[in-house]
Length: 254
Image (tube, one colour):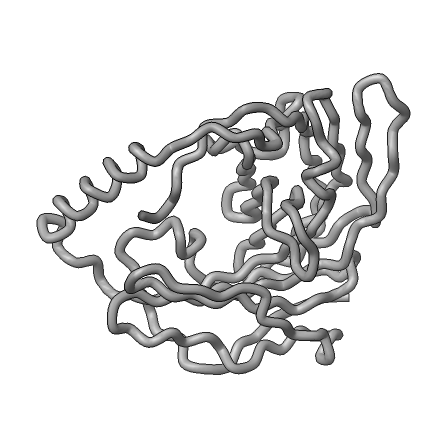
């Protein structure tokens, strides 16, 4: 069943970036302050455990792996804050290219801890997430309504919101069954927090909250996802290795 998505509400295009010379000194100061507040903490490191044949591996932090299929799919496996639960989770974030349809081949994935038998775990419900942000005097504008085809009554929830200096954001989520196929929609190419010069933007993704991060320790654990079908073709994820270890962390915003 296809979960095609349409939005209603005022969505303006991202404004042109200001001249870099006006941002050079504040940006350099922010980078220096961020580096000065880096610290080491235990985190679940997530890396491919074998070569990715269907995906292109992107440079990323130790606790997140980003995989691309050019012009088709952007996938990130990393830590996230759960909805209505405490502690961090290992989550899979998916963005499908506009107009393309994707669907999982199975409803389960596998975990194999070193020296123990393999566990087969069911996929949780998918979340269609809508992230809105604004900077400076620009108003925060999220679509007032999102229609998901075949699931018009999908529950909607404000799962996160906040502000830092002149930056404001909201995260809304709609929950749909795990085997629902989903269709890519137009939007910004990267999460708002990755953009330096946006005045305001809207970003959309599908998210699967897989496993509590507390399950992982210093022992090696292998995570295997089923293949995903995009536009009628199957693509295989590489297996991933997960292991808790000391990691250097630096704040994204200061």
